[in-house]
Length: 210
Image 1 (cartoon, rainbow, N blue to C red):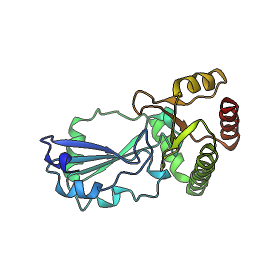
Image 2 (cartoon, helix red, strand yellow):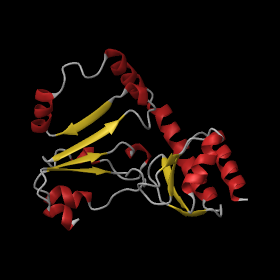
Image 3 (cartoon, rainbow, N blue to C red):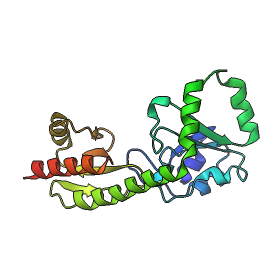
Image 4 (cartoon, one colour):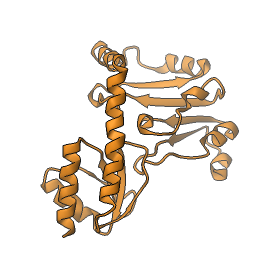
């Protein structure tokens, strides 16, 4: 943290929950309070997290920008709609530089519809959280898995000795995961799917483990 605060950069970007590890980052408010420039917090996965959104801190810290998206918890990746929250001064700068027609009417309507049924949204998020816990518990019992990283996102990061080999086998079975071996050595990133999808994944991993 102290190294970050000593940087001469004008803006720093923080992703929390982080990608690809899935964990919440700590001491963020300490950084926002002391950093001399702008702190941009990417909260794409905040709906799956126990961490409070920093949107509530916008009026406290004039150097804070928080972004969220409809692509993850609300399932609108194809719409490419995001949101940014910041002080009036920062938003005024955005207004001067953004394209005049940056979100189509169709995408705006899709985003508005996604906001209407709050109960349905909360139920779907609750299912993903529950499945995340189940998958973490089950996958941790498979011998080829060396480590399961804690996650507050809709995915988990798992470490193994032969991630690329496992990735290729899963791909051949039409099971899509992310090979993150070049970013976090020895790791695959696994998105939490439906109950059936998760069952298929666990079954195949157990087969590879034999």
